[in-house]
Image 1: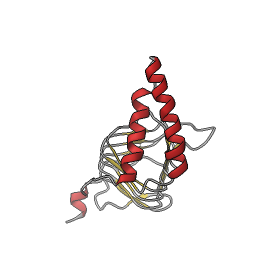
Image 2 (image 1 turned 120 degrees about the vertical axis):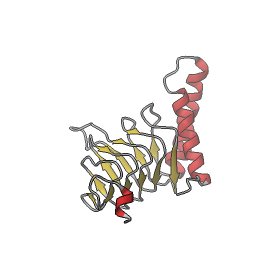
Image 3 (image 1 turned 120 degrees about the horizontal axis):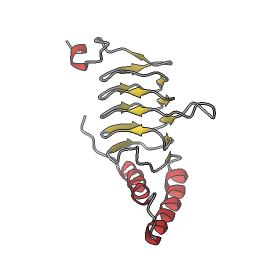
Image 4 (image 1 turned 180 degrees about the vertical axis):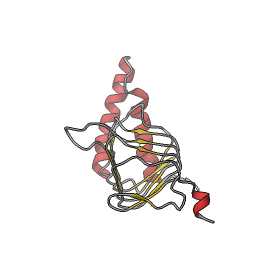
Length: 165
């Protein structure tokens, strides 16, 4: 897949990167920039897109948002580079009692409406189908679909090339 951001995705990602750049710095300039980020995030992120993506050092700058409406990402989640996130995706914890968040590997594609919750890991190069609910750990190259999500890759070790033969 050719990963090219649309204008809305670029805007939301730009605001996220701006906030991440200034989040824990101490200078007055950085504090003013982070305040500006908060205003932009409220107006654009929450107001226009209904998305809540908090700046965090555990979330890569190299993400791709397509139709970035209703995306919720907990700041304690770990998302590695090259991930594709579509509309209505939730990535976070299970609630007040269980605050562990997911770790998502490199180049994972997340379909529209998917929910990834809890202290789980998704292996590199996996694909999560639309509206899947992922609540357990899966290996690299998995193809996850359903509620609850199941790995349908022919090679359960997750080798996508093996599933095409």
